Image (cartoon, rainbow, N blue to C red; front, side, top):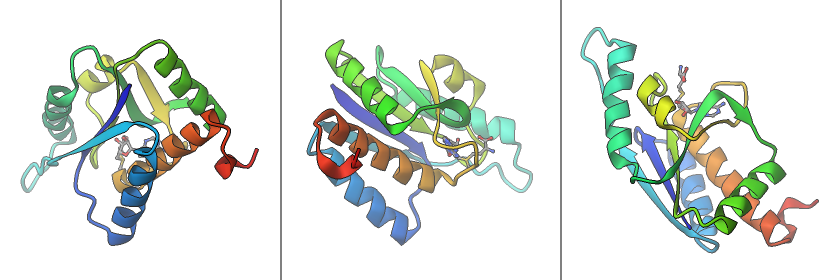
Length: 157
Ligand SMILES: C[S@@+](CC[C@H](N)C(=O)[O-])C[C@H]1O[C@@H](n2cnc3c(N)ncnc32)[C@H](O)[C@@H]1O
């Protein structure tokens, strides 16, 4: 199985860039992982959130391979505990999912079309995070998930 991450917007803050690089590196010890950063739409002097979501959504969907299992990150999505996320990852590996793709939206969130394509909407918290923070938290939880599956001490059960 491969894991992909599609995110809208740059990782502009150095402390988050360092954290994302750290956890992406850790994750790659367990699984093939790739990340695509997409340009955010600006929308001019009077940005229309719906138009921006739709433009960004088209770019996200163009990046999702056919047949991939798509998990979109959304504060209103399903809450998983870390062990549940580990089970989810384990299940997909066992059942032979080829590509598990995660998508993180931009400042105005994800379009309806992206949510409709999604196989799962996943929440990291009921609170709204910046897309950059969501990226770091997701990668840490994916890494944690693999350490749980391997019974390694990181999770300290
Ligand atoms: C600044 S947030 C967008 C907030 C937007 N107002 C909305 O309603 O979705 C940018 C992206 O970060 C991700 N995100 C932010 N908070 C999250 C959370 N608590 N759980 C999961 N994803 C989150 C989502 O993918 C979201 O599209």
